[in-house]
Amino acid sequence: MQSARLPRYGDRLEVRIERLDDKGLGLGVVGAGSDGECQVRVRGGLPGARYGVSVVARRRRLVDAKVLEVLEASPDAAPSRCPHFGSNGGPCGGCTFQHLAYDAQLAAKRQRVTAALAPLLGTGVTVEPVIGMAHPWHYRNKLDFTFGARRYRAEGEDPERDATFALGLHVPGMWSKVLDVERCAIAFEGADTVLGTVRRLARAASLLPWDTRQHTGLLRHVVLRRGVRTGETMLVLVTSERAAELVDPLVQGILAAHPELTTIVQDVNARHATIAIGQEQFVLHGPGTIDEVLLGRRFTLSPHSFFQTNTLQAERLFELVREEARLAPAGVVFDLYCGAGTIGLCLADLAGEVVGFESVGAAVADARANAARNGLAGATFVEGDVLESLAAFTAEGAHSRPDVVVLDPPRAGLHRKVVPTVLTLGALRIVYVSCNPESAARDLAALTEGGYVVERVCPVDLFPHTPHIETVIALRRGDDAQQREQLQRTELTGPEA
Ligand SMILES: C[S@@+](CC[C@H](N)C(=O)[O-])C[C@H]1O[C@@H](n2cnc3c(N)ncnc32)[C@H](O)[C@@H]1O
Image 1 (cartoon, protein in one colour):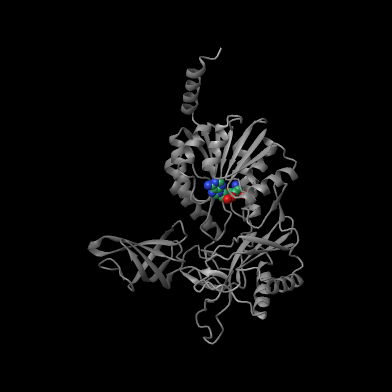
Image 2 (cartoon, protein in one colour; image 1 turned 90 degrees about the vertical axis):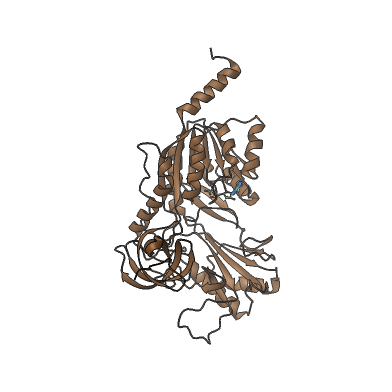
C-alpha cells in the first residue's frame, strides 16, 4: 500500500530496496501522492528485496522503517553465520550485512566508492573492483567488548532470567543495553571462548559491571588483540579502579583457563566516558605488548596503538601503497598519520628516508622501536598533531622535501588546514589511504584543486559484512603544478644554466 501523503510514525509501507547507504542501511523510495516522493531507510534491508515495513521516524522526505515481513527476497540474500544476527541486522551491531552474499557486498562497496569519487577522476580512470577476501570470516585481530549492568533481552526470553550483567557489544540505538556476545563470526578464532571465560569467572566472583547511568561498578571493557602471524594474544581489562584484591584473582583464573594469552594488561579508567582507554596501566602478565608480522616486518604493539584490524587484507593494502609510491632508491617518504609506523616501515626498503607523523605518543614509541628492531635506520618519527608538527618540521628547513607523501587519516579525513601544508611540500606523488570515501572525496577535491591528478583508485575490503571500505588512491603532481613550481624557482634563482 502506498501513501497518498508523506508517511507518518506507525504507517505500514511496502518498499523495494534499491541500494545501500554509507552506513549499510537499505534505501528505497515510496510515492507520497501529491507530496511527491519519500526516501525509506531500512536497517537490514537488502538491494532488490521488497519488504512490508513500519515507519519508526521521519525527517522531511526521509523515513526510517523497520522490517515487518519480507515480501520478495533479494536475489543476493545469503544465510548469516552468527546466532546474534537477525533478518533486520540483529541486535549486535558488529556486522551490518552478513545476510548479503559476499560478492554483492563487494559490488555495493565499489558502487559507494564510485558514487563518492567519480566526479574527481580524470578520463580513463575508474574505480577498480574491490579486492575481497577468499575466506571473509574470523578476520578481526582486535575486538573491544563492553561490560554492562543492563543486558539486552532476546525476544521471547524468560523474563525471570537475570539481566544485571552482560559482556559483549552495545546494542545500536540503545546505548545503555549490552548484548551478551556468545559467538562472533568475524572475531579471530578463539576470541569468543576467552570472552566466555571472563564472563563466567567475573560472575562467579560477583564482580560488578560498570553501570553507564549510575557510574558505578568495577568492570568496564575487555579488549582482545591477536598477532595473527605470531599467535601472540593480548587481553586488556579496563576497570574503574585498580582493586588488586579483586582483579588479580580474576586474571589468575583467566590465565589458568587460557595459557595461550601471552600478555594481560589492566587499564584503569575512572572517568565517566565509555572508552576503552584508561589513564593508568598495569602489566599483570607477560611483556605488555604483542608482536605481529606484516609483509615480513615484525611490529610490536602496545595496548592502544593503532594497527590495521585485518592483518591479511592490510598486506594487500600496503602492497598497493608500495606499488603506487613508485619510489626511486634515494626517495624521501612522509608518512602522515602513521600509527605504529606500519606503512612507512613497509616502504623503508624502497626509500632513502622515511619520516612518520603521529599524535599518539605510545604509537610513536612503538614506531621507533619497530624501526630499530627491523634494522631500518633511515626512519624518523615526529610526535604531535599533524597540523602543527608537519608545518614545524618542514619550517626548520634542515630536512629534505618528500618525493612521496602517504596520507592515512582517521575517518573524518584531513583537517582542512593540513591540505595547504601538504600542497606546499610539492611531492611528486601522494598515496591517500582512505577509510571513508565521503571524507576522501572532500580531501581529493582540495588536492586536485591544488594541482594533483588522480591516477588510480583501488578499494580493498578490510571489513567484510560491514559497510566500511578502505581505498588506495594514487595521485601524481599534474604538469601545471610542476610548471608553476619551476617558474617560481626560476623567479627566485634565475634561469638554470
Ligand atoms: C587510520 S589510522 C592509520 C595508522 C597507520 N597508517 C596504519 O596503517 O597502521 C590514523 C592514525 O592517525 C592518528 N591521528 C589521528 N589524528 C591525528 C592528528 N591530528 N595528527 C596526527 N595523528 C593523528 C591516529 O592516532 C591513528 O594512529
